[in-house]
Image (cartoon, rainbow, N blue to C red; front, side):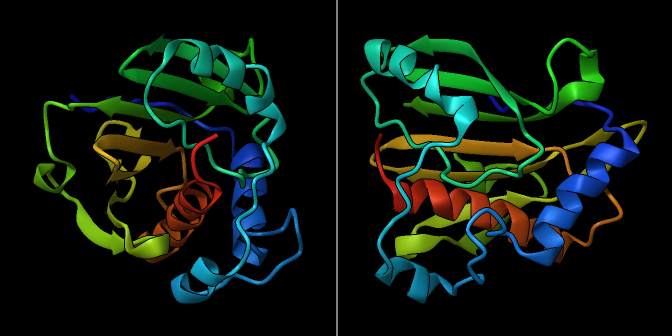
Length: 193
């Protein structure tokens, strides 16, 4: 089933993340945001963000499913930890900084074949369009006693992919969606690693 993490994020770290995406989601390349149609026609960015370099070989050594990792991450995400990997799944936690507890948590990526649920059936999701016409399902940050991160799921080649990023609840749902779609698009366009 879905993994929902409740994490707190320091205000200064959140500001860095929001500035990165509010000014230009593609700040790492200084490129303007592209429409889904235009993004599908440009050469995919196959670069691998530094946090994934050490863990990609570990995933590929054990998993039989296509490994889709984003080419774009907020610059403030510095570390990734491989939580689980098997022939049919992998899960990665993302961190602003390791060793400082929940304050360092930035997000979560996962993939699994034969999931026990369909993301369109999850509460509070709505359909979004990703690159190459892939249908995704987005849920913004939700807050009760604490806030749950924004999530985006999509199915590709029979595998359910999930991206979860801690975003501010003060960011509009529309802007949260733009951030999440940009990250997912970079994974879809980058293709299997």
